[in-house]
Length: 461
Image 1 (cartoon, one colour):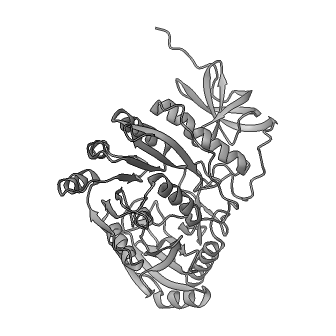
Image 2 (tube, rainbow, N blue to C red; image 1 turned 135 degrees about the vertical axis):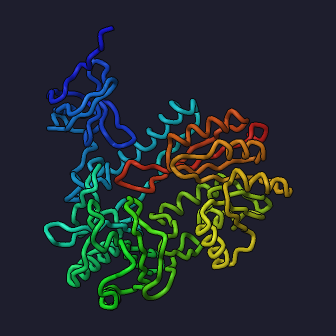
Image 3 (cartoon, rainbow, N blue to C red; image 1 turned 120 degrees about the vertical axis):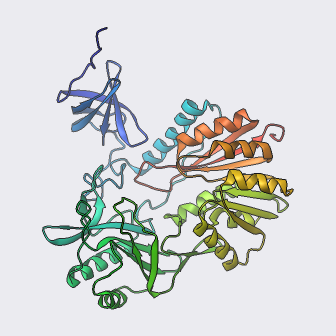
């Protein structure tokens, strides 16, 4: 049998028209039915490319020049956009980004979930789609003997030294610049990932947008922090509104940022922020949404889809630190939250107390195990809300939800592909998808969140 060769070869240059955009932000071209992925190219453009890799069914190419530009193309604002892997869509105008994300959700629901004919609403975006991130996690290293801190180059672990990131809040940029300069002046060594040497691995800045509270987290390879007192005093003197300096130790050879041991060097264990009426205590390792403005948009939509009158029992699976649970508790009779991470549940209970919320309770464990136990205790949820990680819901959890037969399911998703897969299971189990609302939590990137309203078929109007 003759092995069929792709119609293009490595290093070949050609001119193509871009037909679509992948969920990673690359342009899609077809050559005699063969797919080529072209990063930084946009739908509708005619571009000159160089093929850099070919596989059996698809290949990759580099954009050399643009013959006909998309009317949606804009000049990226960030000077290191071409090297950094943090954003993927700065070259696409913001209105077009929102349209692309809506189309992506619609296409994936149809292709993977077989879900058609339901409203996928226009993506809810930001009035000002810059400077929205309230947490910066910056790797630290050395180059030619000098300490550097920035973000990783796309698809690598090479640090691009930088002093400004246009999707970070300005406070975070100032914090990172200040700590980097202090560490340089004190001669503190950056971490060498290859040799597993050096001291400072990461600097994390957390900023409470509503409160102005600031936390600095220093992550080191070992327990010792050279010139610790001088470092603390310098950070205190140069960062206004500082509430906390925290030391985390990560001695492992790993890409994971945080280690297991965390200690407060100065100030408080928590800073505070609020989303809507709900206040949150945030520790160094707390999961807290990085875009609180859009988080409120997302949760308001989840609350609308839950359609609560005050008499309902609600289960919030994957409840994290209780963010959605506490929103729901404002309108529900009782909310039960479950989460596998013990620290997150401790935070959820603390946040409930902080807000005087007494109709929410939280349990540690796997949702698919805790929820049947609740059911055996006579708990009958009217609404189940799920907000799973990118891998989606565990199949056992979906089966548990189907057995519990809530009137409504509200699915909050950060991954349209696993969302589509899970909706298909729920639809086969007797639920109807009523509407989908994409929300842009991460402008300038390809990520999109969704809120989905589902109803049991006998409950559907």
